[in-house]
Image 1 (cartoon, rainbow, N blue to C red):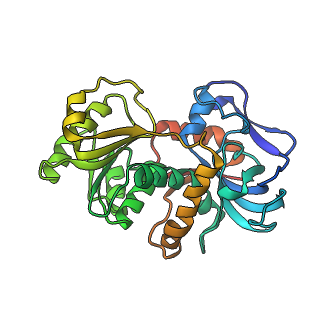
Image 2: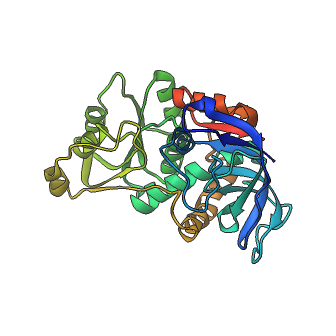
Length: 325
């Protein structure tokens, strides 16, 4: 099979289209002939040498795919051969064939293409796990999403909107802010021109924000704490500006804040399978009623993975970047 090899740790130029044997299926797994794969920040971190795959995972980048099941392992009842599915994987997505755990496969939403479906798993699994399970966002609460125009951000905006929360976001341009508000953000804040703490405090009547989803971290953490409402929850899922910050615990104590974070990739299959069940029950109907849809910025052929990574690192995109295979 053709696949993208990370020839050494480095920039996008280290990605090479090469060939190797396709993976073999074990019990509980399926082999998928991949039609499309999502490109995500963890792929960039892996390529740069900062985010190695967990034990047992493929060394090929790629955490989400869509395609056709062509082989099933022992004990797999669904999906069957011939099923069209999307799947969350721990690696291996940038390839013509990819192994997936059967429990982490989901049917393509009705009328969705493979390209659209490949844009779902990594972002929607992450958003559901962190915003709804970990942070417990409720319908009468507010949420601030940093990086609102990213794949995670555009997914989180739509889900939070559909579940009745008031959504604030930060983004880096007027165009990105416009798109975020079209997706359902009550207010998009251009962080290059405005202070998100001041804006959200004014809009909330000085009460602050109930949930903050932060993929920036670093200097944002202290500002998140000052903005959080009483009993607020701050969830950190990435560190684009670093993982260290000076924290005033008096505010955490006084406002009874929860400061937490998570990574999804190394979690056990059973944990991710529970998220898959929640998505199938509560989110798939929203896809199929056309209430929400992944935002796709651009599709590259597999051989142009280098260009896809260049675009991801430029932060010029709005929504998802996809590889077509």
